Length: 258
Ligand code: ZN
Image (cartoon, rainbow, N blue to C red):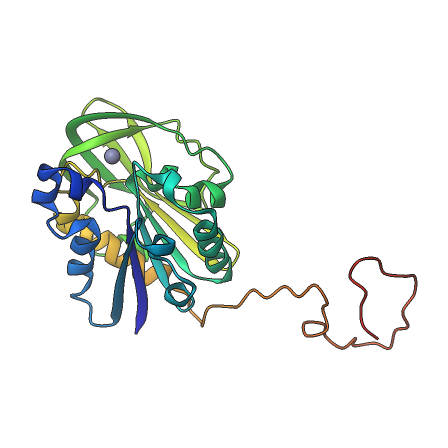
Protein backbone atom coordinates (compact mmCIF):
# COMPACT_ATOMS: atom_id res chain seq x y z
CA UNK A 1 0.00 0.00 0.00
CA UNK A 2 1.17 3.54 -0.76
CA UNK A 3 0.29 6.28 1.67
CA UNK A 4 -1.05 9.40 -0.04
CA UNK A 5 -1.82 12.68 1.71
CA UNK A 6 -4.00 15.23 -0.09
CA UNK A 7 -3.59 18.73 1.29
CA UNK A 8 -6.07 21.46 0.39
CA UNK A 9 -6.40 25.04 1.48
CA UNK A 10 -10.20 24.42 1.58
CA UNK A 11 -11.39 28.03 1.67
CA UNK A 12 -13.00 28.66 -1.75
CA UNK A 13 -15.31 25.65 -1.35
CA UNK A 14 -16.46 26.91 2.08
CA UNK A 15 -16.83 30.56 1.08
CA UNK A 16 -18.31 30.28 -2.41
CA UNK A 17 -21.45 28.32 -3.33
CA UNK A 18 -20.53 27.97 -7.01
CA UNK A 19 -17.22 26.35 -6.11
CA UNK A 20 -18.99 24.10 -3.59
CA UNK A 21 -21.38 23.00 -6.37
CA UNK A 22 -18.46 21.41 -8.21
CA UNK A 23 -16.68 20.27 -5.07
CA UNK A 24 -19.22 19.63 -2.28
CA UNK A 25 -16.60 17.70 -0.29
CA UNK A 26 -13.77 20.07 -1.19
CA UNK A 27 -11.18 19.67 -3.92
CA UNK A 28 -9.34 17.26 -1.60
CA UNK A 29 -12.55 15.20 -1.25
CA UNK A 30 -12.95 15.07 -5.04
CA UNK A 31 -9.35 13.97 -5.59
CA UNK A 32 -9.65 11.39 -2.80
CA UNK A 33 -12.80 10.00 -4.42
CA UNK A 34 -11.28 9.31 -7.83
CA UNK A 35 -7.95 8.10 -6.42
CA UNK A 36 -9.84 5.67 -4.17
CA UNK A 37 -10.66 3.57 -7.23
CA UNK A 38 -7.09 2.32 -6.90
CA UNK A 39 -7.13 -0.12 -4.00
CA UNK A 40 -3.33 0.05 -3.55
CA UNK A 41 -3.59 3.62 -2.24
CA UNK A 42 -4.17 4.47 1.39
CA UNK A 43 -5.43 8.06 1.20
CA UNK A 44 -5.66 10.69 3.91
CA UNK A 45 -6.52 14.38 3.66
CA UNK A 46 -5.45 17.52 5.52
CA UNK A 47 -6.49 21.16 5.29
CA UNK A 48 -4.91 24.54 6.02
CA UNK A 49 -6.78 25.56 9.15
CA UNK A 50 -6.34 22.31 11.03
CA UNK A 51 -3.76 22.41 13.80
CA UNK A 52 -0.24 22.53 12.30
CA UNK A 53 -1.95 23.00 8.90
CA UNK A 54 -3.03 19.37 9.26
CA UNK A 55 0.49 18.13 8.55
CA UNK A 56 1.78 16.60 11.75
CA UNK A 57 5.06 14.73 12.03
CA UNK A 58 3.08 11.56 12.49
CA UNK A 59 0.98 12.11 9.37
CA UNK A 60 3.91 12.80 7.09
CA UNK A 61 6.64 10.49 8.39
CA UNK A 62 5.70 7.54 6.20
CA UNK A 63 3.80 9.47 3.52
CA UNK A 64 4.79 8.37 0.00
CA UNK A 65 3.20 11.21 -1.98
CA UNK A 66 1.83 14.57 -0.85
CA UNK A 67 -0.63 16.36 -3.16
CA UNK A 68 -0.88 20.14 -2.67
CA UNK A 69 -3.66 22.55 -3.67
CA UNK A 70 -3.45 26.13 -2.36
CA UNK A 71 -4.36 29.55 -3.70
CA UNK A 72 -5.43 32.51 -1.59
CA UNK A 73 -3.84 31.83 1.79
CA UNK A 74 -0.31 30.64 1.08
CA UNK A 75 0.85 33.01 3.85
CA UNK A 76 -1.10 31.05 6.45
CA UNK A 77 1.09 28.00 5.92
CA UNK A 78 3.49 27.88 8.86
CA UNK A 79 7.24 27.91 8.31
CA UNK A 80 7.39 24.76 10.47
CA UNK A 81 5.03 23.06 8.01
CA UNK A 82 7.17 24.09 5.06
CA UNK A 83 10.29 22.81 6.83
CA UNK A 84 8.59 19.50 7.63
CA UNK A 85 7.46 18.98 4.03
CA UNK A 86 10.78 20.03 2.53
CA UNK A 87 12.63 17.56 4.78
CA UNK A 88 10.41 14.70 3.68
CA UNK A 89 10.79 15.61 -0.01
CA UNK A 90 14.57 15.62 0.34
CA UNK A 91 14.30 12.24 2.03
CA UNK A 92 12.30 10.80 -0.86
CA UNK A 93 8.60 11.68 -0.52
CA UNK A 94 6.93 12.55 -3.83
CA UNK A 95 5.24 15.95 -4.16
CA UNK A 96 2.48 16.81 -6.62
CA UNK A 97 1.84 20.56 -6.84
CA UNK A 98 -1.45 21.48 -8.47
CA UNK A 99 -2.44 24.68 -10.28
CA UNK A 100 -2.06 27.79 -8.06
CA UNK A 101 0.28 25.85 -5.80
CA UNK A 102 2.97 27.42 -8.01
CA UNK A 103 2.98 30.24 -5.45
CA UNK A 104 2.91 28.02 -2.37
CA UNK A 105 5.71 28.48 0.12
CA UNK A 106 6.83 24.89 -0.29
CA UNK A 107 7.07 25.04 -4.09
CA UNK A 108 8.96 28.34 -4.01
CA UNK A 109 11.27 26.93 -1.33
CA UNK A 110 12.04 23.87 -3.44
CA UNK A 111 12.44 25.84 -6.67
CA UNK A 112 14.40 28.76 -5.22
CA UNK A 113 12.67 31.26 -7.54
CA UNK A 114 9.52 33.42 -7.33
CA UNK A 115 7.56 31.04 -9.62
CA UNK A 116 5.63 34.00 -11.12
CA UNK A 117 3.57 33.68 -14.29
CA UNK A 118 0.91 35.60 -16.20
CA UNK A 119 -2.77 34.69 -15.92
CA UNK A 120 -6.28 35.50 -17.12
CA UNK A 121 -9.46 34.21 -15.54
CA UNK A 122 -11.79 34.05 -18.51
CA UNK A 123 -13.06 30.47 -18.69
CA UNK A 124 -11.24 29.79 -21.94
CA UNK A 125 -10.38 26.53 -23.67
CA UNK A 126 -7.09 24.87 -22.75
CA UNK A 127 -5.47 22.26 -25.00
CA UNK A 128 -2.79 20.20 -23.28
CA UNK A 129 -0.24 18.59 -25.61
CA UNK A 130 1.64 15.54 -24.41
CA UNK A 131 5.39 16.02 -24.87
CA UNK A 132 6.48 12.49 -23.98
CA UNK A 133 3.83 9.82 -24.67
CA UNK A 134 6.27 7.20 -23.34
CA UNK A 135 6.39 8.67 -19.86
CA UNK A 136 4.45 6.80 -17.12
CA UNK A 137 2.59 10.01 -16.16
CA UNK A 138 1.22 10.27 -19.73
CA UNK A 139 0.09 6.65 -19.94
CA UNK A 140 -3.36 6.16 -21.44
CA UNK A 141 -3.63 9.68 -22.88
CA UNK A 142 -4.12 10.67 -26.51
CA UNK A 143 -1.78 13.11 -28.27
CA UNK A 144 -3.62 15.97 -26.54
CA UNK A 145 -6.71 16.62 -24.46
CA UNK A 146 -8.85 19.69 -23.94
CA UNK A 147 -10.55 21.42 -21.04
CA UNK A 148 -13.44 23.62 -22.17
CA UNK A 149 -13.09 26.15 -19.36
CA UNK A 150 -9.90 27.00 -17.59
CA UNK A 151 -7.93 29.90 -16.25
CA UNK A 152 -5.05 30.87 -18.55
CA UNK A 153 -1.52 30.63 -17.20
CA UNK A 154 1.12 32.08 -19.50
CA UNK A 155 4.87 32.33 -19.90
CA UNK A 156 7.26 33.41 -18.66
CA UNK A 157 6.86 30.86 -15.87
CA UNK A 158 9.74 31.79 -13.61
CA UNK A 159 10.86 28.39 -12.43
CA UNK A 160 14.22 26.66 -12.89
CA UNK A 161 14.55 24.57 -16.06
CA UNK A 162 12.78 21.30 -15.25
CA UNK A 163 14.31 17.85 -15.64
CA UNK A 164 11.51 17.16 -18.11
CA UNK A 165 8.47 18.95 -19.53
CA UNK A 166 5.60 16.47 -19.95
CA UNK A 167 2.79 18.83 -21.04
CA UNK A 168 2.55 22.14 -22.82
CA UNK A 169 -0.74 24.02 -22.90
CA UNK A 170 -2.27 26.20 -25.56
CA UNK A 171 -5.05 28.60 -24.58
CA UNK A 172 -7.88 30.07 -26.62
CA UNK A 173 -6.36 33.54 -26.18
CA UNK A 174 -3.16 32.38 -27.88
CA UNK A 175 -0.74 31.90 -24.98
CA UNK A 176 1.24 28.76 -24.31
CA UNK A 177 2.52 27.42 -21.00
CA UNK A 178 4.72 24.60 -19.72
CA UNK A 179 2.02 22.85 -17.74
CA UNK A 180 3.59 19.59 -16.58
CA UNK A 181 7.07 19.87 -15.10
CA UNK A 182 9.22 17.26 -13.38
CA UNK A 183 11.95 18.01 -10.85
CA UNK A 184 14.13 16.06 -8.49
CA UNK A 185 15.14 17.58 -5.17
CA UNK A 186 17.27 15.39 -2.93
CA UNK A 187 15.72 11.92 -3.13
CA UNK A 188 12.23 13.22 -3.88
CA UNK A 189 10.44 13.64 -7.17
CA UNK A 190 8.29 16.74 -7.72
CA UNK A 191 5.65 17.17 -10.41
CA UNK A 192 3.94 20.48 -11.13
CA UNK A 193 0.60 20.07 -12.97
CA UNK A 194 -1.11 23.26 -14.10
CA UNK A 195 -4.90 22.75 -14.54
CA UNK A 196 -7.27 23.04 -11.60
CA UNK A 197 -8.78 26.50 -11.16
CA UNK A 198 -11.41 26.33 -8.41
CA UNK A 199 -14.20 27.97 -10.46
CA UNK A 200 -14.23 25.23 -13.13
CA UNK A 201 -14.93 21.47 -12.89
CA UNK A 202 -11.36 20.52 -13.89
CA UNK A 203 -10.89 17.73 -11.34
CA UNK A 204 -14.01 15.99 -12.66
CA UNK A 205 -12.30 15.60 -16.05
CA UNK A 206 -11.28 11.99 -16.76
CA UNK A 207 -7.96 12.93 -18.40
CA UNK A 208 -6.97 15.18 -15.50
CA UNK A 209 -7.88 12.37 -13.11
CA UNK A 210 -5.75 9.96 -15.14
CA UNK A 211 -2.73 12.29 -14.98
CA UNK A 212 -3.07 12.70 -11.22
CA UNK A 213 -3.37 8.93 -10.65
CA UNK A 214 -0.40 8.24 -12.95
CA UNK A 215 1.61 10.96 -11.20
CA UNK A 216 0.92 9.55 -7.75
CA UNK A 217 2.23 6.15 -8.85
CA UNK A 218 5.28 7.68 -10.52
CA UNK A 219 6.22 10.03 -7.67
CA UNK A 220 6.17 7.51 -4.85
CA UNK A 221 9.62 6.46 -3.64
CA UNK A 222 10.83 3.16 -5.02
CA UNK A 223 12.28 2.24 -1.61
CA UNK A 224 11.37 3.17 1.93
CA UNK A 225 11.80 6.92 2.50
CA UNK A 226 15.33 7.71 3.60
CA UNK A 227 15.66 9.42 6.96
CA UNK A 228 17.69 12.61 7.01
CA UNK A 229 19.48 12.67 10.35
CA UNK A 230 22.20 15.23 10.77
CA UNK A 231 24.06 14.78 14.02
CA UNK A 232 26.14 17.74 15.20
CA UNK A 233 28.43 15.23 16.94
CA UNK A 234 28.81 12.74 14.13
CA UNK A 235 29.56 9.64 16.20
CA UNK A 236 26.50 7.71 15.00
CA UNK A 237 26.93 8.62 11.33
CA UNK A 238 30.70 8.40 11.12
CA UNK A 239 31.89 5.35 9.22
CA UNK A 240 35.08 3.62 10.29
CA UNK A 241 37.95 4.69 8.04
CA UNK A 242 38.80 2.10 5.41
CA UNK A 243 42.51 2.89 5.68
CA UNK A 244 44.29 3.52 9.02
CA UNK A 245 44.53 7.26 9.70
CA UNK A 246 45.72 9.38 12.60
CA UNK A 247 43.95 12.63 13.43
CA UNK A 248 45.83 15.75 12.43
CA UNK A 249 45.08 19.39 13.16
CA UNK A 250 42.29 20.39 15.54
CA UNK A 251 38.49 20.77 15.52
CA UNK A 252 36.47 23.81 16.46
CA UNK A 253 32.78 23.68 17.29
CA UNK A 254 32.01 20.07 16.45
CA UNK A 255 34.89 18.06 17.84
CA UNK A 256 34.96 14.47 16.62
CA UNK A 257 35.04 12.04 19.52
CA UNK A 258 38.09 9.80 19.65
ZN1 ZN B 1 -6.67 29.60 -10.46
